[in-house]
Length: 287
Image 1 (cartoon, rainbow, N blue to C red):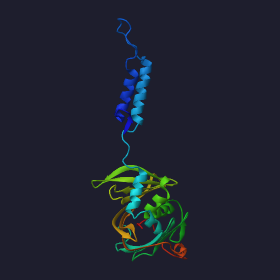
Image 2: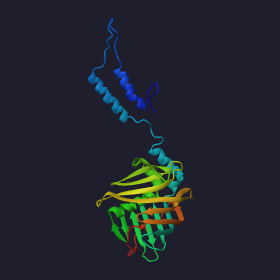
Image 3: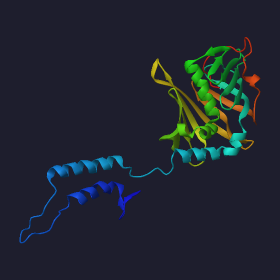
Image 4: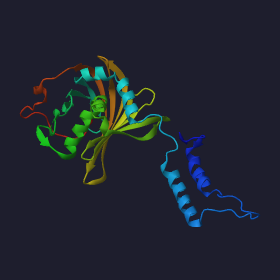
């Protein structure tokens, strides 16, 4: 990036300032070879100015900013029109949890944009675990929950519909430091959800697909907070929108394989209502 004319680059700019202000000035007088110079105090100030400029002037602007990266991601997942049309979906599949049950279980997820989510997880040797989110309220096992349990469902709803949230709240998205995984570099979009909640998405800069998300939740008992990590693969197109049919969750480790995925414009509100006595408790285990 050029800062001034004559092709002076950013790292040369402080040196240019020193030369401009500290070069000899005035003219020769008679036979005297004395030149008029800038006083030492002024020179010291100019050196400080030059060093300050070197620190604060960026030497190279990023090739793409967060807005452009978000646009790449939205396009990769089907584009604005297709994503807007798929405002609700139902997913069914199989879940395997290393810390819950030796046998695979079934999972059902129903989502309605922007903030309604129902998750059912059932293992052969356990009761159904039911999680429901409706806006600012959440339930697990039929009981109201708050704090990290509620926040985890809020972030789950966002990660399941991340491209749509990029469109809905671009002002809440920034670009984080890039990361390297298995020899590949991913750029990072960070969504500030509020209340200390963030959801980072590691995006393949070539395809625009999200490889991994990291949900961060503040927690009083842990200074570093809680993190829920999900990795995505087996991408398939459903009604013009891209979805990951395989997920790996690290909290604890579980594997979700979707067998069916249906998108629609809406889902009945009754789907997100609680049934009396519905669902066993429990925690973790993906979803």
